[in-house]
Amino acid sequence: MKASKYNFTVSAKDLGESNDVLVYNSRSGAMVTLDEASFAQFNAFCECESAIDDKDLANGLMHCGFLIEDDIDELNELRLNMYSSRFATSHLGLIIAPSMDCNFRCTYCFELGQLRKQRMPDDVAAKLVAFVDEKANHLSNLDITWFGGEPLLDMERIEDLSYKFLQICEKNSIEYKANVITNGYLYSPNIAERLKSCKVNYVQITLDGVKEIHDSRRFLECGNGTFDTIIQNLKDTKGILPVALRINVDIENQEQASEILSIIKAEGLEGFVSPYLGHVASFGDNCGSDKCISKNQFSEIRVQFMQKIGENMMDMLPKPKSNFCIADSCNGWVIDPVGDMYKCHADIGSKSKRVSSLLDECMKPTNTFNDYMLFEPTATEKCADCKFLPICMGGCPHQRMNGTTDCIDLKNNINNYISLCAKAILLQ
Image 1 (spheres, rainbow, N blue to C red):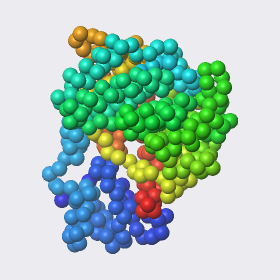
Image 2 (cartoon, rainbow, N blue to C red):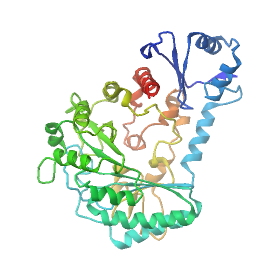
Image 3 (tube, rainbow, N blue to C red):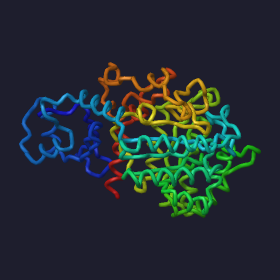
Image 4 (cartoon, helix red, strand yellow):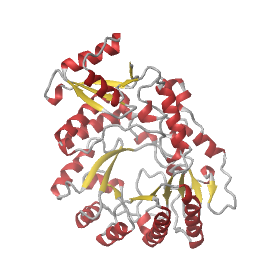
């Protein structure tokens, strides 16, 4: 028996018991609070291999991954899990843009150069259904994200494709999940009910702060503000579908982003929307890096945000990954209205990043596909020696492709983050 290399220990004094210690393991995702005596035994074992006399304690620590068998090579385990997930054929993840049109002109949008009055034609939709149907015999899960542009501009196509996907899933006993990423301007009760009928699990909508801030960043194509309409839509639709409320943070609103929490309370939306912060990163020519904050800055802002949410905070404890996202999954695709296929949503519409097409008679992925798929973080010295590897797995593939990958934002703030997660969980 030996200690895992992925253990983190944090003082639990903020939880009320000054001698308690939180222990978190990034590989298993488990967290435990140990009293002074239990931690003393655990720590003595980790530092000098002293025996743990309390067998129940030892068995519990072993069960949760804090202790492992002597012959376990954790890095090899991570590598195996990564490859098993990366090249699995039982899961299909699709990000689908039924339209590349948008009614917004957000200042930081990475798609501004790609927006066009374009909807998915019937022949492309038929090819997409056939693509899913061809894979159905091997699938246990199908996950759909409706994206854009603004996907709700083509609600009819979302319904048409959803019902056909659901028929395929029912026929082949496939678990189906779906979500929608929308700016929220068209999210009426009628639309919400129609999405619910399409078995959409949740909706993501963005509010970037109070009205003045939001309207200066997320406005209509004609220049008019959108804050009031989105708030009213959230009030009119509360309870129909869960809403993940994203607050994009950059240098322009970093001081005011958390003010949205007061608005949620004032508008009676507590319990109906789940707010979280999004880091505005520089993707392409339309999102200038001069407005982006560093990951370290973002991490500090996020911890402050979590403190303000307090006991209403969702469980945000870092979860272990097998691979980072669909960009480094062989069965993960981003599909635009003309049937072009990409590996990352940040590439959508950029022909140079296209890796295949639904309209090709035979799919022949490009070197871009190979570059996304073949990065090996467990063989990279910087990553292989890092305790954060299980919750990072090499970081954002798109940023790596563009030479801008750096460590996850939690790296310099993990102690505060774990403490806040523990406090929220214990108060539930």
